[in-house]
Image (cartoon, rainbow, N blue to C red; front, top):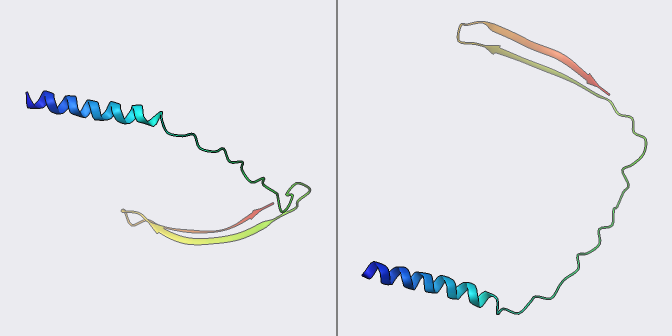
Length: 74
């Protein structure tokens, strides 16, 4: 019997809370501030990159590998 009363009161609170939300006043609509781009990134572009990496790795069998190399891009 106590379980039914608790369930009924919980349902009543849940439904009463949802029904009162419809009575809230509507908020005033606000407009977003217009975005002004500071720089236009369109146009011709030339670029290059150069890098070098080095390292050493070993596995569980004792094999050691040296990993060195240059990387270039454009």
